Image (cartoon, rainbow, N blue to C red):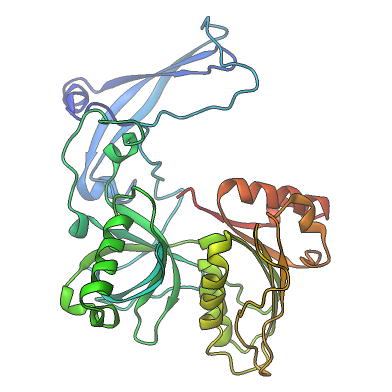
Length: 388
């Protein structure tokens, strides 16, 4: 929970280690009252319970009271629950979601920037210690050494800024590849109004205008941040398989890492990549896929791409790279948004494939629904949405 940041509750718990919690159900009108013994836990002891946290208050339940139909107000039927914009990001207990630890003092130094478009770029960061990454995993990075810590503000100055009050400067980005020297490649889209990405792209664009050589070697700038850990089980299987990858826009990033992993593998892979994206991004993402295939020197990979994008001419030639035999990656173009029925088409060829989906939550839900129509259980689908 996040209160007014005056921390009076900590003193109350310290002097009187008791607490009560009230949980309201606006659909049924029921209320659950919980009482318990409270304890404040600090520093390393707190981090052993909840990662990246210096303070945790534990409540051991001693009693409860459940009152049915206690509230006179109800949520309107047919409406969805909308969390408060002031709600802080969810943090998991260590026992719920563990991450791959790195050395406590591991830093990342910006080495290189590739600008793919006005709002899409790959940032290369060199870790100060060796970091092991499985293709498809993400890096958890503390960006406060770069953007600074936000000053205390009790209320947002204008609508839309509420979540910034809880912004701890920590970001999770999928790693789109790792260079032979160990640099982590992060393909990032600039988020409009984003506290971190807007500053990263501002630096990148200034480099491109004033000192383009820094894009190739950005180390003299000295931009250094902290690596907290490597996270994620949305990873390339250890054995060759028939795979279906469905990506929404920049959701292609874990699949770029997986393609690079396949180029170094002796396993045999058969992959259909379904890419649903904006018209302006199709060629850009095609180049990224092509670059990921650059190290392919064997017949281990058979890849086919199916794209869905409004305004995309179906006879347009888009380069998604070259296969081991010198032939171009086959591409099927659809001048439309992806729809549920598309998942049952021969182009997608979903049956018998292990499915991975990465994109906005709404797109993932659409894909899952479409896959169920062809008998694929939603529980068997690997998912990595943008909700982290």
